[in-house]
Image (cartoon, rainbow, N blue to C red; front, side):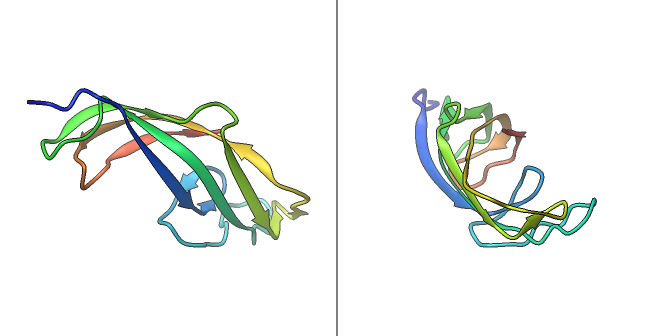
Length: 108
């Protein structure tokens, strides 16, 4: 029997800009186009629907618009970061379980 409820999780991670979510640790941005030495921290609540079980399955994941925060220190494309911002995402997962999430999507 498949679990049919949404699961809420909190993600705290850093990002290699633009938009690649990494493991829950701090990392430097490494994209082209100038000095990308920013270290960023993201905090947001992720929703998974229909939720996870031990059986691999597909589904949708997202967070509410403008629901998270992103704080960076350093430079992005040569420009010094001047303040915090908001972040949210949407995507889908395939062959995912409560132990492993194979997801793709976009961060805004």
